[in-house]
Length: 408
Image (cartoon, rainbow, N blue to C red):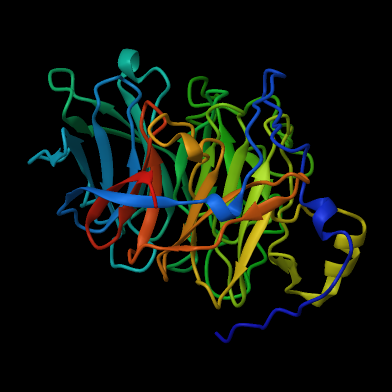
């Protein structure tokens, strides 16, 4: 299907809608603030240090939050591998290759999220594309448990599906699951695929595709294996599906929470022209519309309804974007809160999968969100991850795991 070109329009409201706050200040869910130094893009420097190589199509890295020092790397064909002391354990933590559709493209086992009480309950969650028999191509969230007698092995028979959403095409699967600081499970689903969201999922708040979902996995409902948080924006079902936290997303491949401020960062993969990064302040009550497919970044993608939506400020515009002269598939990262690279503290890192360019983003002296010049990595960065101490890692789809370190 041919893609439609985006039309560049100019409006004075772009910056005001981007949600900039006072320089260095971000509201947290508890009402506190995190003060960061003003971002100097000229001083941004970062490097990626190899940790270990030898994975098969690594697409995600996570920490279990159990102080074990282990990292868990997700391989797209359907395995989760443990990295301990800089080496890959020989046996996978979980192998569900028989359940996963992994014919390539954007499908497969795509992420893992460990329950905040993992040390006590042993529960973790995965996002994957299901193979035939469970609904071919379905975007799936499932719960698993660690084995009772081996902390390095999950019980593959413990799998229980929470969500299974039919996906009409083989791309734009999203696939990230992650717990927020509120203890809720967030999940990103793409718009269903093909060009231009032909089924109009992203702008339909009643559809689960093209959304960020927010679920209560500890209090299942009578008719569902999960609960709906009472403070979800459409919890009653009026105006949207109860699971929906935010909408208007094309393919939110990777998002993250700032561990100090609680702010939510959503990187949304673009189509013809623009890759974008969105920020949702921790004080948000959800329900934001990030614009797709009326808009691609700060450009009108569909003429009908776009200008009116912008003028009435119905859409939340990105805090950062870049054109396809620099890349074509944004990989969202994290705000750095570790100790190893003090100069990076408070800086949001993100990259482009296709070109390997990496940026830092922060607020300058005027409070404007300002990106650095891109840093060349030479990698196909498929994901970022954070360990228990706030140090950041990146996976290269070609097989490597890297640690974020100071650059020169």
